[in-house]
Image 1: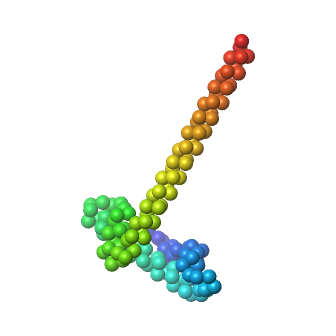
Image 2: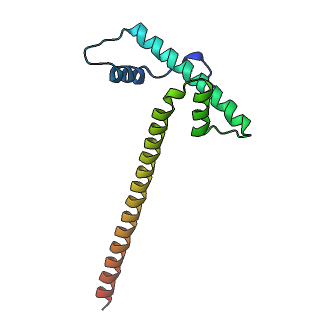
Image 3: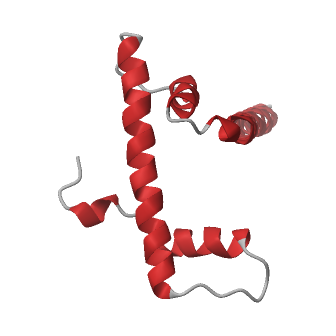
Length: 130
């Protein structure tokens, strides 16, 4: 658990970037407004996490899953955000899978290259022995 209350705050740079992306160009947000949004977001995350934990405990589980968060959104009456959240979760999973596949492909390519280079060295050794 967090040692200090400040440890639970979201990074200011992240909050500022999210706010800027959500607002039209030319709109500025004061420092106190950014701090208020960061505090509100932190409180919401804690509340949602607590609600998702209750859902997981009802299912006799200790690990909170994406479905627990979805159910918690319904429980706290934020169900209008479930579709965008589900879409974001699917996009995240797809990106993770693509990243994993790319890493596997890269490792396989490196292994294949090493195998080819090993064969070339063996052929060269055989030619010298001849």
